[in-house]
Length: 112
Length: 422
Image (cartoon, rainbow over all chains, first blue to last red; front, side, top):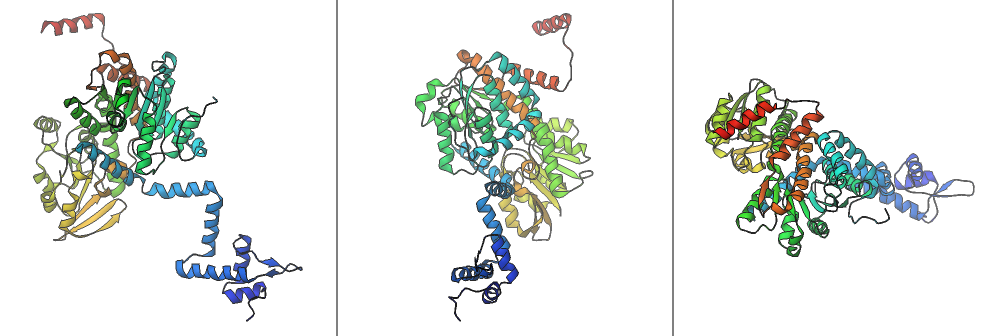
């Protein structure tokens, strides 16, 4: 197989195991952006094909779906979103952790 | 102002949210607001440098605003690295002109560096929730001890430590034990914890209190509050005590009083409020009824001997949020709430701002008192003066629109002659 030849969206899909629809989704969210022919057809080169294969690996190894990656990208780009998510996650174990810390502090005080 | 305040907070862009929440808490803190108004007029703290080490929360922010209004130059650091509200820290720096050194989740080195930063402020007055600033001043910064007029301490544990220092002759300036004010006990311990403890038990278990045998260990301020509310919900309340006077008082209040060894056999719900350890111990778990609910609202989870409960059990599982079910060898089940941690904070929301209003009103007025009485205070731990308690009670009544009677001249004279005549 001549992997050095850029592939059309259909061939790239067949080659990497994703659907053509998924490839368009990935392009739309700037995760894997193919080149274009003069007539505007998508062309997937070696780099893009490798990115698509690596994405399959992420799914196999970690269960990461492309939509998860889209969210990961948002977390990197949108600071406010990241703060809100951090805050929400941190709030879950708040009460327990600060009380435990308080307990250790006061035990040290009494032992001094 | 041109000068940027010294500070170390997580993210200044959080300030608007902090302001919003501080102002919400402010609505629930009318006593502090009344003091702030007077401080603004009278400037009793003008020019004084204060270093405060408290939980960096919306309520504390309103205390800082009050001290600022009185003319003080204030630096705040955290008394617990995990309770800091980063938005509040940012708001204090950007909107309320207070230096803050506190970042939620900061490591131990940063935590202590922030306390040092507060001490770098060269304070004349200190405010502690666990003797941190006082501790640094008495060790690494002894050269600054001479600057200090007085310190304020918020916690019982801190006061125990400071009284030990006083007994050793090691205390280098006067300290006012803010936690011992009656207006603090009433609200914080009796009504605040009384309500939030019941709230925590009900939220976590959805149990009906009416008709249950509810055992309260300890008849101090917290125990009284819990007992009163539990009885109000229709529970049959049993008190256990080690102090004869308190036990007698509980009995005369209409509660049943018995040792824990007996209460353990009959109780449906157990709540410790003693400040001591292993109040509910192995021998008590051994005789409890199937389905007994056990929680703590006193000092820390050491009030319950949780390791003993674990060793008696073949296993445990999470029965509900905040409820761990232990199965004993004979099949009986015991339900432990919130890992034995303070059930009112863990499973409910702890103190509402209106409770902190009374505590922090004591802090603000004790600070003013310390300045006014600097020359007569010795290197001792002092309770909050009665006048402050009375002033806060008056302010609180006024904010609630409640009026009371005053003695006529005739009555005052009569009372005075009475006390003189005895």
